[in-house]
Amino acid sequence: MGTFRIEGGHQLKGEITPQGAKNEALQILCAVLLTAEKITIHNIPDIVDVNKLIALLEDLGVKIQKKGKGSYTFKADDVNLDYLQSDQFKHDGRGLRGSIMLVGPLLARFGKGYIPKPGGDKIGRRRLDTHFEGFIKLGAKFRYNREEYFYGVEAEKLKGTYMLLDEASVTGTANILMAAVLAEGTTTIYNAACEPYLQQLSKMLVRMGAKITGIGSNLLKIEGVESLGGTEHTMLPDMIEIGSWIGLAAMTKSELTIKNVSWDDLGQIPNAFQKLGITVERHGDDVYIPKHEKGYQVQNYIDGSILTIADAPWPGLTPDLLSILLVVAIQAKGEVVIHQKMFESRLFFVDKLLDMGAKIILCDPHRATVIGHNFQSTLKATTMTSPDIRAGVSLLIAALSAKGTSTIHNIEQIDRGYENIDERLRAIGAKIDRI
Image (cartoon, rainbow, N blue to C red; front, side):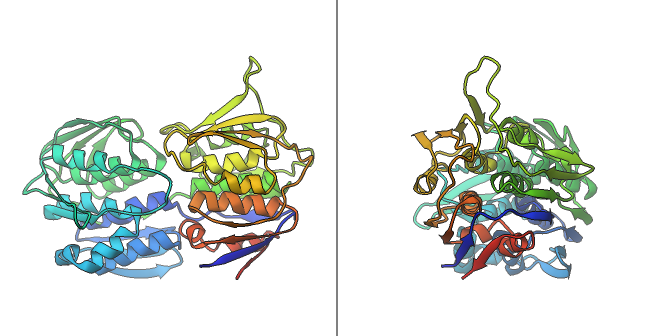
């Protein structure tokens, strides 16, 4: 189990460039299975979860060539479907949440797709019903081996239909969309997710020859085509990482420039930090955070009531940033309620922040009230264990702002989502070692 040792209390300075978007990568990489032609993808993040998926594709028979940092070509012209029934696939697929999105492309192109029950972060229940209900509506037959926790869908030919999703699931929408592009007839998906990453996938599929309208809305219409061709695609920067660096700058009273953020795709993220009183400036396509020497003050509602920051489907605030915002609120002037609506266990890491001296009341599994210190007292260093990707980075930000030397164990969780994070932090002045 890897460990970070962090000497906190130092101001940082400089520029940092966000990696490619993890959540987009997991969708885009699965889409290479939709065609036998070559697909070139740029800005792929070098992180554990993405590398696991690339290895899975290679085991499936996809020909993969690395062309440079973050750039690969993929050619799925000789896919080994027998691998899907192997013990190796049942083992490897279980360790990666994003492997569920292999099913849609495999079902669309080859008439069958299988997946072991995926793992991933321990942040509460994340149902797969939306995915499989969509496949069934397209005409697939569902089967489930309860003893091996192994899911499967099969169909001779998918047929377009109308469906109203029970939830605006990002991965569910992506999976159904990838299945529908090769279905016979027209598919309508209402209550579709419309995150920028979903828009990126849709635009890539259109360049491959798919016929999709309504991109960017919650109503997608897909006219099925016989086959898709190759294309070239560049991924967006990771918006969660961008939010992480904004929070880090504020908590450490640092001056940071976050480069090439694709500002127009950030949605509510700058606004959420501004509600905590943080100055977030747009400089071209960069985010500039000045030193907050005098701290930052929470903006209450106009009637004086306590601010609530909550997640919501896009264009609402992404749930992946709530743990970061919670940590940043520790040093704000004022109080704020953090309401994590989508996952019932994601706030449970606050006990570690309480050990560091934070003033947080965990109201229930979904809500926490943070009473800000206004930098009148400093968090104290401690030893802790990272429970998941986002909580791990939140604890890292807390440790970088704390007085003394902290230790974070189980940093493999952080490595699943953040590329060479210790090296990149040292480049802007952080005192962090991997031991």
